[in-house]
Image (cartoon, rainbow, N blue to C red; front, side, top):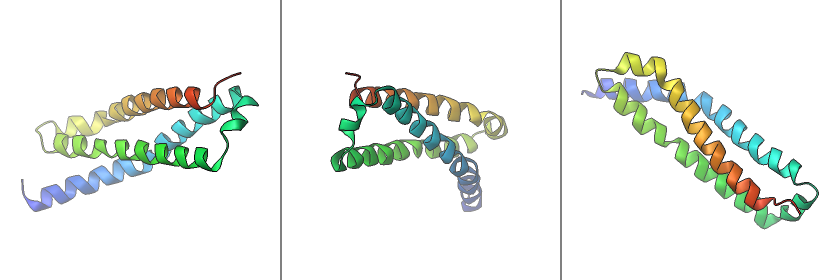
Length: 115
């Protein structure tokens, strides 16, 4: 693998995954917002500076986890399955976002319990 191929694979991965990060974050935000609204007015007690810092920390960790897809993408592009991978990598987006959404749901249920 030469430097040009690596640079092209990284550029392609960034072009594909970065715009989809907005979708990923939007879905996670929607999950948390839905559970906040469902538990309202009891969920208001979670609104604090510490609560905001905790949500910010979780959002950063979710985005760090999203970055794991770059390793998978670049590895797959280095294989003989490059073209097939590129046509099916949306499946990784759906699976990863679903997994992150489930985790976000568990955190939201814990943070915003109905009383």
